[in-house]
Image 1 (spheres, helix red, strand yellow):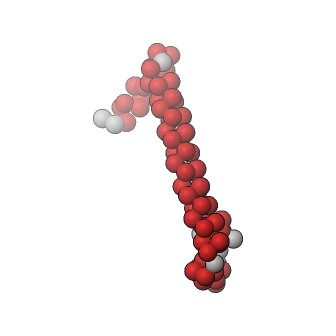
Image 2 (cartoon, rainbow, N blue to C red):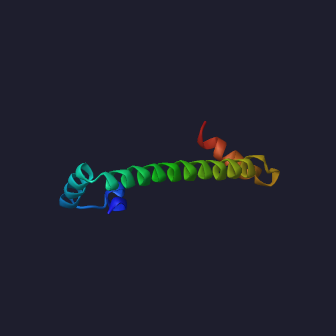
Image 3 (cartoon, rainbow, N blue to C red):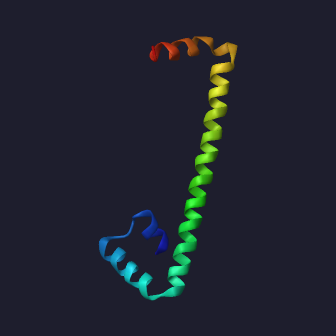
Length: 79
C-alpha cells in the first residue's frame, strides 16, 4: 500500500484512505517515512550510477582515436 502511494499508482479513493490511516496510525506513519527515505536513497544511488555510466561512455566515445569519425559528426551537430 505504501509503495502504491509513493509511486502514484493508487486510485484517488485509495490515496484518500491511506492519508487518513497515515494521520491516525503512528506505526504506519513511521513505516511510511522509512520507506519514503529508502526510495529517496535508492533514487539518488541510481542517479549516481547512471552519471558514472554516462561519464564512462563519454570518455570512451570522445577519447578513443578509433571513434574520430563519430566525434567529428557529433561536434558538427553543435556548431
